[in-house]
Length: 158
Image 1 (cartoon, rainbow, N blue to C red):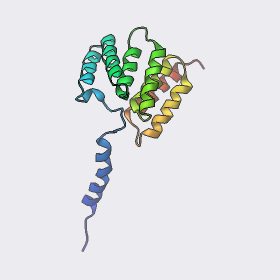
Image 2: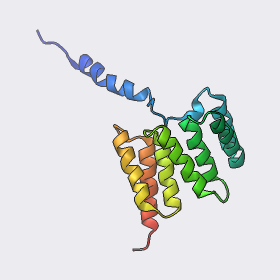
Image 3: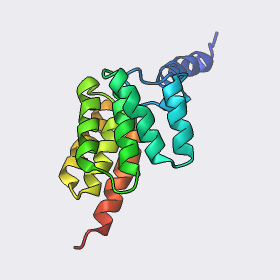
Image 4: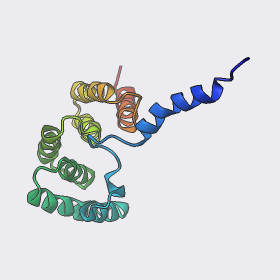
């Protein structure tokens, strides 16, 4: 009697993918999709590219809940995206997010992009390497920072 193992193999192979699709509890997933009203307000402000309002929303939330890495990360992000960003504040807030949650993938991506803004390719690559170690498979944060690093390098004179 010949048994067909194909359905069993397919079922077993799909289990890890289902686990990965469930998301990373370590932070860095799409926070705007959350039920957190602060993150919903932030998402609304950023959808209109109102970076000042977005920054104010998460700045106030971070002051009330200083242990929330997402709030610090998003505050830095909104400041960085705004006109004339205070890069000292940006790095301070990203580093606070990473102090709270060293595995926060979005903070690693965004601080890497911030380092590119100030011309520090080596530090951006450090965060790219950290993302490489955090992502079992290439994740969006790793892919996005890798593209940003490649674009930055392509613009540099040879």
